[in-house]
Length: 319
Image (cartoon, one colour):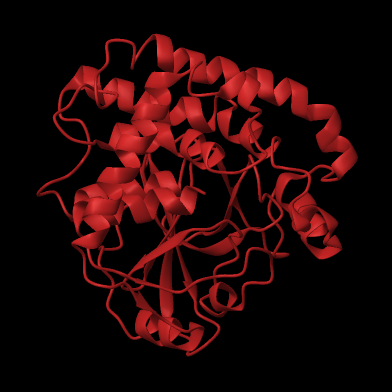
């Protein structure tokens, strides 16, 4: 559903884009053809720069299209925006969301999907496990609903930062609640009804209506087949310069060094490898080659919840 965050952002900003829909489970041949091993979606390409992780994608879009950006401008609001992002992802809301999926979903009976999810999350993904973990997850999510109802939305404001229009903070905070409220069988009405959380549901409805209005005013999204997307990306220019490697970074890596980078919270079995061309406090950039056409591409990862390690002469990451 984090894919929805990027689509919402592009829609609310009126930024035209093309999309290439990927399978819900591996393999994803289009990404592999581009030399990308990162297994989570969405992935955003601007030219031959390929951005992984929704949080980095939104940050890059804010910088690439600064006029009309949705991000907060005041330091205190920036802090709330960032804390909401971390609460949702690092504070357990995201992981709990996946634990309340309706057990009647056909995907639970698909052995290939179950195996794929176990590779993704690094633990068992069976109906039995979900039955055991569901009550605890529901308790955690009910507390999250209550937090929003009784704090940020308590005064009846339209948007979480009390802004005149929807902001990036709303996108960062709303997506798990928006998704679950529309997923039949996920949230028991006796615990999560509109009577219990009227302000949260009003926020969700207001957000949906705002996105729908923006969508209706946008040109139709271009849908690309895999081969079209690969050709478009590999024949484009880079949109960012190579960058520099922070000499003060604790990892003590050097520009041009071969490294691997991968997420540590999920999808950790899939590592991107390439030459290190940029390393900042927020981002690591690797240069690798597309398998189709052989063009260089730059893969961008955030630093948060990602590990970077040099590759030794035996082509294995140093432990």
